[in-house]
Length: 72
Image 1 (cartoon, rainbow, N blue to C red):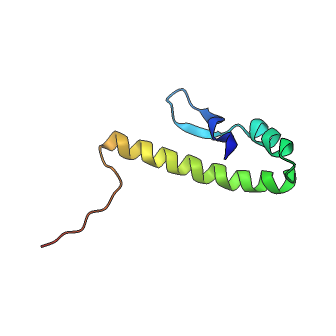
Image 2: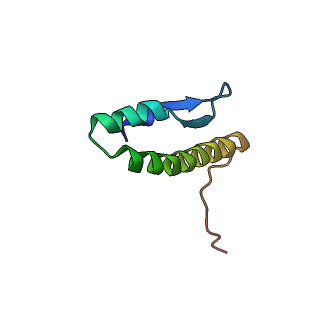
Image 3: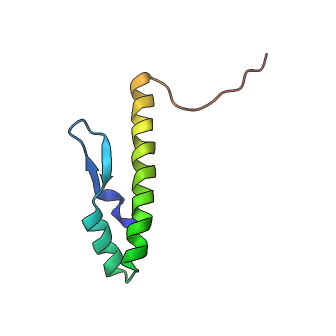
């Protein structure tokens, strides 16, 4: 997505969202239906924020979030 460089960050560095103005301008320039894009962006933003913040939390805890299998 072209707007991934348009993330909004908290002072702590955590991702708090997508710059919707920039994202909608990109969509408009590409001739996309803004009503549809705005609905999809909300869902994308929620997923992105959750994933990025979960990854940051795992990094802070020293875990990678990957699972390993026991071979006992």
